[in-house]
Length: 243
Image (cartoon, rainbow, N blue to C red; front, side):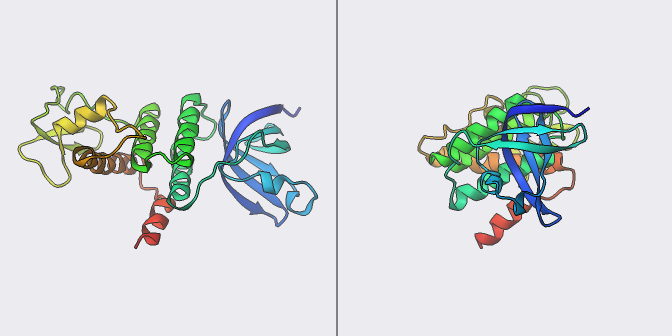
């Protein structure tokens, strides 16, 4: 017996052509997490689904099936697609790839879905890019259990503002006698712990700019650790385009 679900809130993370006439969709659903869908024969039909089944387009989808690949039976766009262009578009693809590669398929996480929508809306509305990305990265890693302790070091001692630390996989932050190039100052770890990321609509001064660079390096280190050897194509593409 097939299981049918209606009006499921979904964002498409990626899509690809299958057997010339169909589309396989990697989607992020509010109630069902990351799922795989197929729109059979849609590229050779008169349906307008190919125009609707786009990334960054809020969708309501009906699907059926009991296997891991669900069949799409109806598609509706309740609102317009988000206006994302230039750097903001590449940043949005980066968010999609993080979800694809870090969130296990079928794992329901309504909080991450809400964080994702908020990040896309901030990007579309012209908010500052770096704080928007850092906030999402932190919240995503936190909810997936990939964040180390920012308040206590590897020995269980309090992180101190005046001390230097470096990150060691599986152990957290280790106190160091001096600040090394890949290390961090205690005050920055504490600032991350309290989620004092710069407001996405504020002006960046010299101090906050330094913290943004430090937090970017920190989040990249933690994300690489969480990826476990997987690469981010969006990161490589963005680097090539900015050479």
